[in-house]
Length: 285
Image (cartoon, rainbow, N blue to C red):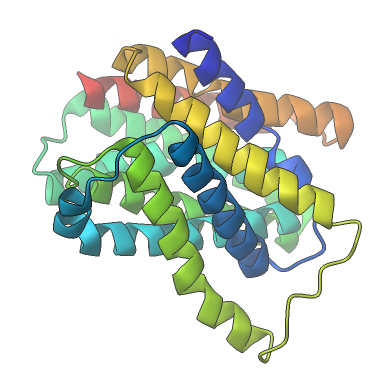
């Protein structure tokens, strides 16, 4: 299977996450915990099958960043899944794609990158897009606004993961992902047990297939396909293909969940995705 096809399949899988999360009868932290654990185990199993060697020294050198970024991954999932519960998949997904904009804003302070006029215009474009979406949702009620806020929080933590990963040195992307998933699981476990008063997860039989698919397919298999394609594709190709995810998520939500998108929301979505795309291209250049 070619690298481009692997990347496209991964993006299509990512685009259906919201659909599965909405069918899981657990709170967001429990979904994030089970996803991290099942996904991490799946990738560990794949690593054994692929006979990949573990670089212990590289892991030791990067251990603190890996743990902190893993914790951020867990919080990122919690807020994204909360967003799905409060608003439409379209709104939560578009809010989540503010992450590249956050990276653009923070990069001058953390990575010492210059904030050029073109990048500033990308940020402005994304903000106008968000105002378009929020303006519509203020009419629909407070629930949508809460969902969008959760989506933006998720984007913030995802942006922090992107920035922390910039400082990781000499370590394989698959190893990074496995450690981040497992550290997310370990850091989320005490929180979930505390919130659940020490009880075991009360998983309904109907939710089990969705949880397994979310962990094995959306995390284990999709991450494996995605990261294995990165080494063979150009940066701009990766940036372009990454937008299959939100577009497919919006199409799926409209067809299956009958979620309606108004003209102003479509304009807002185009502005956010367009600004994120341009921001990524400029950052890669």
